[in-house]
Image (cartoon, rainbow, N blue to C red; front, side, top):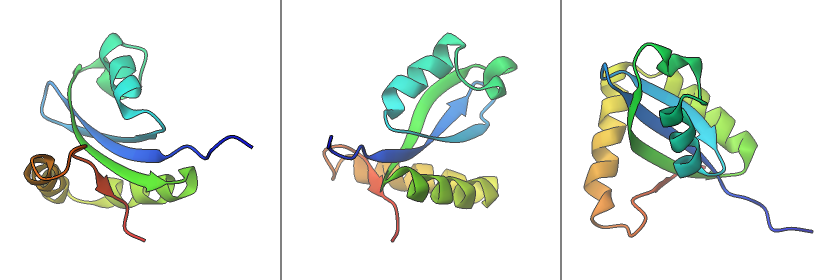
Length: 101
């Protein structure tokens, strides 16, 4: 049996400063897809600019639940997540946070 893949919740900042939330087992690859126009329709009006937040969640189910939680947050709370990641990036080698249990 192949090892289980880790799934992630991520936030991408669009050119218009909006934040897009999604999940992937490879956030860097998914961000590249968003930048190339092969990602979400969300970026049709304002291109993806930066991958600003990544949170490791273990399995896909946990990542989906966390994505829903984040999408329900007001923008100010999402911006706080981005700032928290920026503060941890210098302390943690990967700059990733972990999903709460």
